[in-house]
Length: 197
Image 1: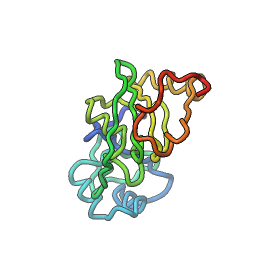
Image 2: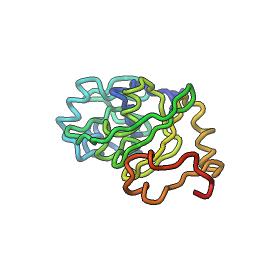
Image 3: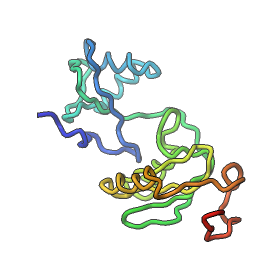
Image 4: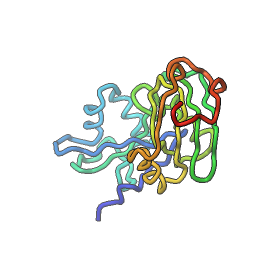
C-alpha cells in the first residue's frame, strides 16, 4: 500500500517544512546521483553532507544513503537551506489572532512564503518561529514588494474553506493608492473604510 501523501516524514525545522521531489520515470544509479543532477546549484558534497546527516528521507521515512536505489515514482523529502540569506530589516505586525486565523501587516520587500533566495526571511517562516505555530498557512498572498494585510489559517483543515472565499470573490483584496508603493504604516488611513474607498 502506498503511504499517505499528506504524511510528511520529516518535521518542520526552524519554521521551514521539508521540500520534496517525486523521482521521475528515468534511470539513475542512485537517489543521490539524481539529486545532484536535478539541483545543479547544490554541489555533490552538499548533498553528501545532507544525506550523512539524515536530512534526506523517502516517503516511508527511510533515511536515504549514498547507495539508495533509484525508484521512479518515489517521493523524497529533504531540508532546503540557504548559506547566505540576507536579512530583511522590516518587521511584520500581528493585528489579529485567534484559534483559527492570524492577520498580519506585512512590510514591503518581505516575501510571504519561501522560494528562490528567500527561506528564513519570509513572513510565514518568521511567524511560525515567533508564534510556535507550525501549521500556519497563508490563505492568500501579496507581492514581495507590496506592504499589506495577509491572512493565515492556523488549522490546516480550515484553509481550503477560507481560501475558497477569496477564489470565489466573496472576500476582496485591494490596494490603497500610494500605500501600495510607499506607505510604511496604516496609521494614516482613516478606519473603517467605506466600500468605495
